[in-house]
Image 1 (tube, rainbow, N blue to C red):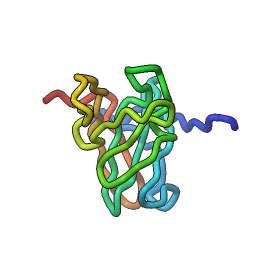
Image 2 (image 1 turned 120 degrees about the horizontal axis):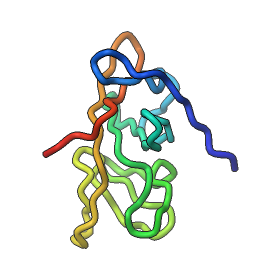
Image 3 (image 1 turned 180 degrees about the vertical axis):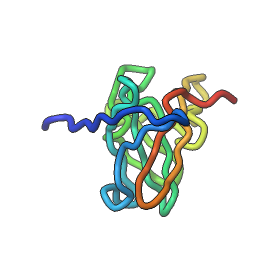
Image 4 (image 1 turned 30 degrees about the vertical axis):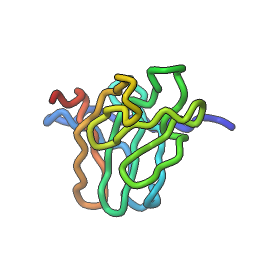
Length: 117
């Protein structure tokens, strides 16, 4: 199966348009490119979340993982991450970068720089 990427230009406020709201069904993830970085974009009900797509354990593609509530499990080894914070839920100390997301006029935008907590 071929990876599908969408690449968009950076906006003045640091956000990039990455998808239309109706392109991502609730409970799913998708791989997008943000300023050259591979990001996993998830939709939970009407909320969107973005984290680094690469699992720090073995490099699995998190956008292809199983989403249950606000947790995504890596499709390779089931390591789980909270998509709101990027923190691992398994207590192993793993975490992934988390990106700010906004929705405007049916378009989903992801901030180029990761959030800092």
